[in-house]
Every structure is written in structure tokens, then in C-alpha cells.
Image (tube, rainbow, N blue to C red):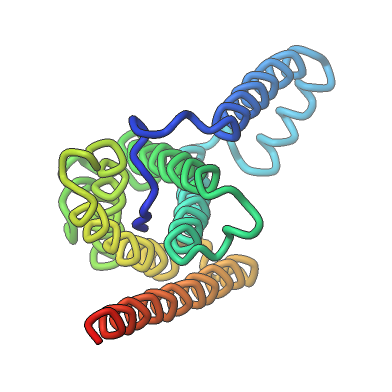
Length: 246
């Protein structure tokens, strides 16, 4: 979502962003090292065998599990990015967090959601359970599986990618264009919600239905709040103009 913050080149790097990046890097590297070490121990081998038995990870359906998991994570990150964008625009979280931190975190989450979306998409190329061609992945509505709702997901991905790119070309396109394009993020989230709900194989699970209902309703709340705040701000501006003219 749009914001009146200055661009990255006009403002110092937020210490919160540096700290967040450092913590995220340490956690990721630590998990990889610990996981690699544990996998070489007898207990780790037993755990790996248990996972193979529990999830069938050594079967043809392995990549199908990966694309399902990455899709769910990408959706949750997209929801969080949308909520943060609306919070930045409506100044909802200004009393709790610094706006620069919220903005940087919003941008970071947007990039992270795209990373998981790429995993979700590219894994389908090597999946043997339900293989996809490059054309079926890139072109909407030609998927062999629920083509309409998968096509909505493809379009949503393009929208999310476009919105995220504008973070880095804001100075070139101008603040007005930046804001207009960011309005599309709401359509991107809605498309992701519909794609997950109607084409996801996990939608039948009560837990996933709760996730979709909770994220959808919370996004609706923040959208309504943002619209109200924008309307009030414009009304106040008009009132100030009238008072100035008088």
C-alpha cells in the first residue's frame, strides 16, 4: 500500500531494518547448521525415517507436499504484507511502531512472499504427481487442474510482482503512480485468497478454512479502516481549503 515516507535514498537506513536482517540471517544459518548436524546423528536418521513414514516424503508426492506448504506460507506472508501496507497508509500502528520500521518490514515481507511464491510455482515443473509445463505456469486459465482458480492465482502473482517492483522504482515513476499501482495489492491479495480457497487441496481441512476466514476478514477490516481514514483526511483537507478561502 502507499505511504508518504521518503524513498530509501532520501532517508537513513533504519536500525530496525539492520537488526531484523541480521536476526533473520542468524536464525536461517543457525537452523541450517543445526539441521545438518542433527541429520548426521543416529537420532537424526531415525527422525528422517519417521518423516518419510509420516509424510511419504520418499514417494512421488514429495514435491506436491512442497508446493502446498510453500503456497500456504506465501499466502500468509502476502496477508501480513497487505495488513502492514494498510497499517502504514492509515497510520494505524504509528503509536506502537516507528513508521520507517513498519515500512521496511512491509517491504521485506513482500519480498519474502515472492520468494515462497516462486518456490510454489517452480516446484510444479519437477513435480511428478501433477506435472506442469512452463506455459501452464505462466499463462492463466490453461492449467490442467482447476484452470479458472489457478489462473486467478497466476494473475495475482503478476500483480504482486508488479507492486513489489515499484518499491525500487518509486523515484522514477513518482509518488502518485506508486500509490495507484499499490492499490492493486488489494486485488492481488483477494486473488491469492480465492486461488488458495478454491484450488487448494487443503481447503477441506477445518484449520485451513479458519485461516482463510480469519485472514480475509482481518484484511477486510483494515481495508474499511483505511478507506474511512482516507475519506476523513480528504474531508479535513477540503475544510481547511474552504476556511482558507473565507
